[in-house]
Length: 102
Image (tube, rainbow, N blue to C red; front, side, top):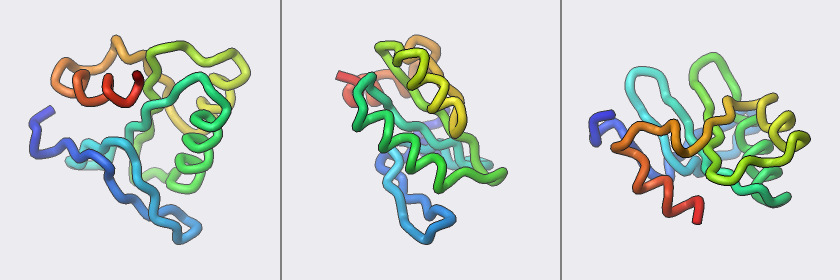
């Protein structure tokens, strides 16, 4: 991903009217929204709520993890985003996302 298309703390307006700060976005041509998620209740819930609100055909959503969430949490996240292991990310974005997963 060319660096000019990678945005950190990307602001995206949801259907509710709330503007969400998404960890990362690849902004060309269609926004790809990326949230780092940890296997803890608050992280799972926050990611679910944000992605449920911004969900549309105008974007793609990915929840990235380094420690696999429980089966139940993974099922919940898959309702609003694609669940992707950190190891599957493109090399150019890995160092930045890794800091959020620690």
